[in-house]
Length: 189
Ligand SMILES: [Zn+2]
Ligand SMILES: [Zn+2]
Image 1 (spheres, rainbow, N blue to C red):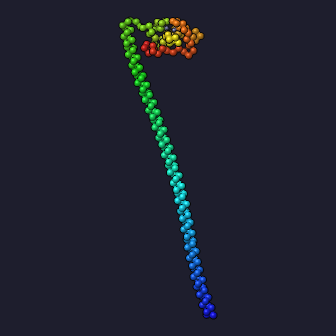
Image 2 (image 1 turned 30 degrees about the vertical axis):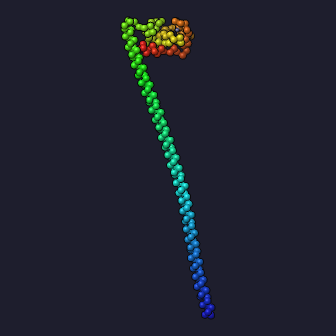
């Protein structure tokens, strides 16, 4: 009886011991699994973070590219603007030079006229003998033959939108108007 109970007790201890050993294994296994899960989570986080970093750097790259493009456009616009300014300045210089040349020619002409006492033939309309000027009726108009008369005379000679030159008989069509003889006009004004 005593023996039996002693054996039973011994068996109980062994059982308890092996039971607590089992518990320890289980705990260790659970902890190992938890650690494994944490590692997995961490790995995923890393991956996500890397993905986001790549996306961000792509965005930054794109933004930089856009900025560069905008910068280039601004530079191009500026260059075009500067070129335009230079052209305008150039044409202003040319206009100034031309104006000075016309002034000099006018002065020489006036000197010649005051010496001769009368105007040159090309300064007056060869039909009415009025001097050409900027006043509409006296503006010099050049015909397709190259001869120049005043607006008023050509208006009088005009028939069915055409004028026959009184000097060389060439017929000029009036439909689009007759251009001013600017060279004569500039010196007569
Ligand atoms: Zn005339
Ligand atoms: Zn003519």
